[in-house]
Image 1 (cartoon, rainbow, N blue to C red):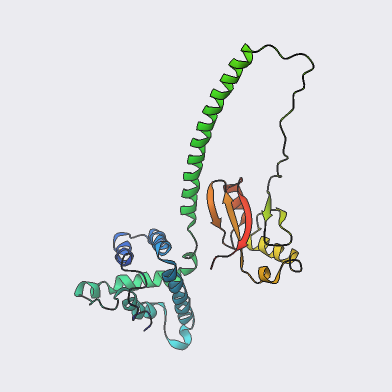
Image 2 (image 1 turned 180 degrees about the vertical axis):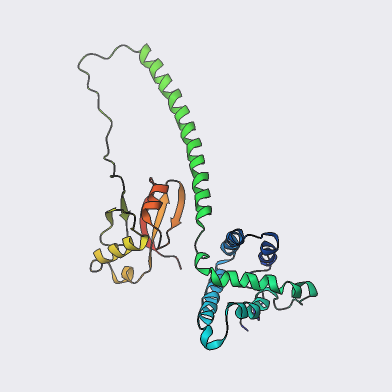
Length: 268
């Protein structure tokens, strides 16, 4: 009743036709899921959060099929009209015939909901490639500018008198690199603000958060300890990326070795 009585549809008037079209125009389930995933990402935050809570509830209903006789098919047939025929809009014959299509969408949403709430990996990969291309273009411009500057300097040096013997030249400052597979994580709000962590194939983002929580369990303020923290990948070939707790850090590190790693309060 709550969903049906909303003044505007949960999936928004703007995107509602796209949900139906993706099933009618795309036959492969994998591609349907990718399109569905992107549509969920486009929804306003309040709608997306409400959809998440609703789908989690429906998943629990289906999980108790043995007691309530409500399997995935039954739930989808009951829920679909409330999601795709909204208040103030009459259901025409064509929309009633689309009931099977909308029920299929609901089944996909319930069955695969766990992948819908994070930015899809193929989209992040595309963003990385775009950023790397932009960075390479910028580096080329800087290189060309540097070459021109160096040529001007060489020309000027040839025109100057030679440097007297014994003149001192200073080597450039050398900064030691962090070893391969080691990241330095910063947590500005904690008492221990940084920590070098050796990654392996099993290290997840949540493991790093747990380690910081353990190290700072006595030193951090009560306010910081009460906050939900998240690990962010910043810079390199990404702008800022809030990592999923289950993300394997070695894979993320290899995809963006020049990033900075910062623990911040999770946005609510």
